[in-house]
Length: 269
Image (cartoon, rainbow, N blue to C red; front, top):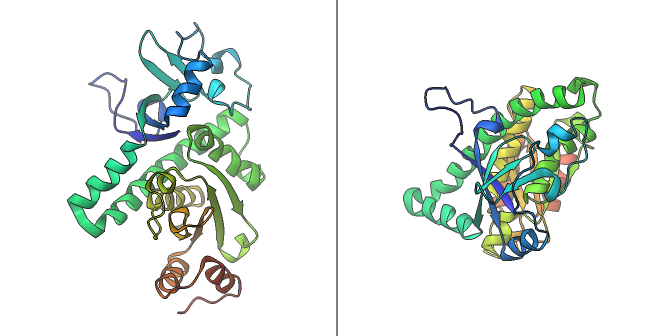
C-alpha cells in the first residue's frame, strides 16, 4: 500500500490552498488485492466514530498500524489519515500508468520529472513535519536525537506502504548519508528492469533533507530492487557528491564501490 499526494482539497473554493498542510491535500493509497482483503476481513471500512482516534488520544504517539493511522468511512466513501488528509484507494496499475504516461509524454526526461515531483513534495513535507513535530512532541528539532527525529518523519510512510527504511548517519559529519529502502513500491511494481527506477524517492529525500537543514542537497539511487538487488540504496549529499556518484555509476561501479569511494573522501572521477 502506498500514498501519493495530489492537488485536491476539502477547503471551500474561495479559500487559498495551503499546500504545506496535509489536511488540505488528497492522497492516493495504492494497494494490492491482499491489502483490500485485509481491510475487509478486519471490518475496517465502517462509519467513523464521532471523534477521530487522534481526538480521542491526543497524546498518543505510537500510531503505526493501518488501523490506527487511517479512518475509514464506508457510508461517506472517505478515508482520512492521522493528519486529516483525504486518501483514495487505487491499484498498483496507477504506478505503471503514471510512469508509462510520463515516458510517452516527455521521453527520457520522465526520470527528471519524477525526481522534481518528489523533490517538491519533500520540501513541502519538511515544512509540514517541522511544524507538526513541535506541536505533537512539544520539543524543538535541534533538541531531538536525529535517529528519533527521522523515524518520526518516516513512520507514516511505512504505514502508507512506501517501505521500511534504514538510515546510515555514520558519515553525517562528512556531509553525506545513505538510506536503504526495503520493498519500494515503485521498484516492486515495475519488477526487474535492469536500471534504477525510484526517482520519486530520490527526489523526496533530496527535498526533505534540504528543507530540514536549509542547505541544498541532492540524492541519487545507487542500488535498486529493479536491478535484481534485494533492496534500494540512496546517497544523500551535496551536488558534487551526487555528480561523482552518478559518473561512477555510469562507468559501471557498484553501490559498494561508490560507498567505499565516498567514505575514503574521493570526489573526482
